[in-house]
Amino acid sequence: MAYKYCVAQNWGKDFFTARERMNFELSGHPGDVWVVGDNLYGAKWIKKVNGVSKTKDEAQAIVDAEITAVQAAYDALPEAEKQINQRPTNITLK
Image 1 (spheres, one colour):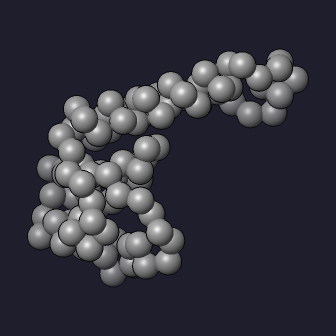
Image 2 (cartoon, rainbow, N blue to C red; image 1 turned 45 degrees about the vertical axis):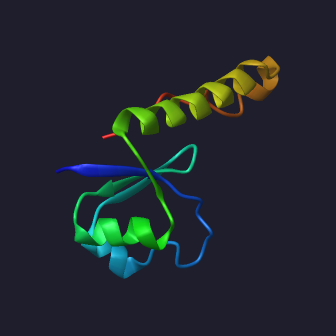
């Protein structure tokens, strides 16, 4: 399947609907990055949410920067706090 990539801030209720989710694939990632199924419905959704289109490489760079920042914050925690949560892992976009 082909995908489109965009950045859009989730505003909550009705950012995406159940009906929309049935019409195209959608996954959210750190940095407000969204991977959207490349079809007519996905394109309409990107327009609805005022998504800013990105290339896959641009989207991956945004996700990587967000994950790196969270990992650095985790690494700076005291050992006792690290035992409560796991270190965030890298994400590779589809």
